[in-house]
Image (tube, rainbow, N blue to C red; front, side):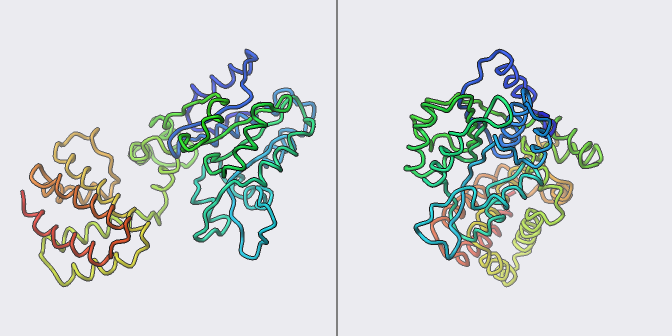
Length: 372
């Protein structure tokens, strides 16, 4: 068992295997890289490789198919459900059923998906001191199946200070044949002492060709569609999957963008006011996501005017609209429009009134679109 579930990243795979073959595997690894690059998929697959390499039991592979091997320990951020007493120290074990359900569905997942799996609502997920106590206890036991014990810590930057300091001690003096794999998105938030005791492995975005190949082989997508999606994904398998989702939120955002631009061009103040009131009812995170998407479309429509296919990263629907609209985004207004959306993102982040922010955008867009 090994890296069958990993998309691309052959260089990292080979490097990890070489470390094992040359008997210079560090006791603590830190996987870093952009979202969607497959850090966790690599960590889990490498753990499976280690746990089956010299396994004494024929059941090792069977147990790893459901990620429930006794020598594989997962740590991850959790919430405190309503009604849980303050005296209880939350650990990953409290959400093991939800975790197993998620990782058995896919090795590629996001924090948002995990929060949804836990029904977190607005709660922040952290790794608390209860986790370090639990992990120290588990790793003190002898490996039951083979040579290694593997601890995968997902998003270690979400450890609180007490947990991080306790974990530091076990990383400094690890139990025999224990390998820590930390999968991190914000290494700058980790304790410097933890960083200094791990070997960092930077993982790049997935190669476009690898995403394209995976889309055709794993998802049965046509080569033309796979090529377009792979370019838009920009190294992220999650983003590629989002593009496949018929209910993708970006499709709603595209509709709202088209509506804004058409109404502004028509100078339809009444309907622009209705538009601004509609988007003002979105949650703030959704509003910022929509505005970020608008910025992306402004860039893409501006670049579309150069008629160089390699410069554009649009879906078929986006490109269809750009055929007639792109000429309205040009040197005379592209910077001002981009600054308008960027300022709106900052204002929304600072709790500005959404109706005022979006109606201001709508009115200014009327003027900006005639600058061509």
